[in-house]
Image (cartoon, rainbow, N blue to C red; front, side, top):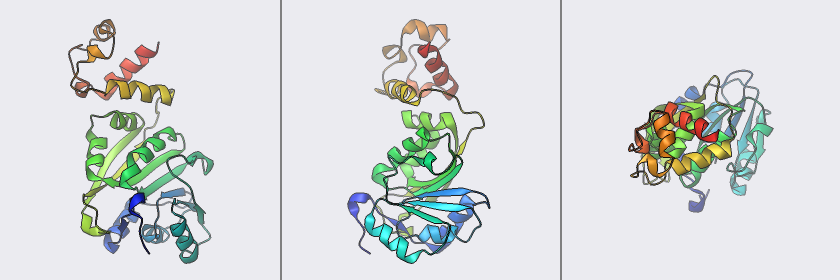
Length: 243
């Protein structure tokens, strides 16, 4: 099958690695799964070896959709020809386990979408560019803070380019997001806007982005850069700034 460069298609083909990832996803008997970008179904086939309630395959490429429909025969499968950046995950189930090999060119947007859908995404296991994965785990970036506000992030493994066809020019990483037990309730659009402003121009001191009197009142040095802030301090700033 001819892959489309514009869609960032790199298929994971290493059999042992596929089996290991399915093991890490660890589907359970009553779970509803969502796979983003199944491609030709290499990982799907490994996951189908486990017991679970049903699996939804979200694939943008119509050619891949036809291939999946012709080659995957399992009554638990539901296929959707949709774009994960805009899809309503919560329309599938109020309690989802999501996984996928995310296209490099839109991986950050799909991660962002996951956060906006966090009320129904209990866990996500994503393959993405290693550099992006490391930033999500450690920060500092607005997206890393956005993710870590709602999820615990675990770096599971690195994936060399040779595991994929065609081999990408960068290494990949496998990350797990596990939703926190009591994630904060907030307006996500407002919080995103706050974070993008806070993390813009990272070399500038905090006092250039937020009122100095606010920072002083919270015992935060106005001369600090955003990278010095802990997650708890970011949330404190946001919640105080919102009042």
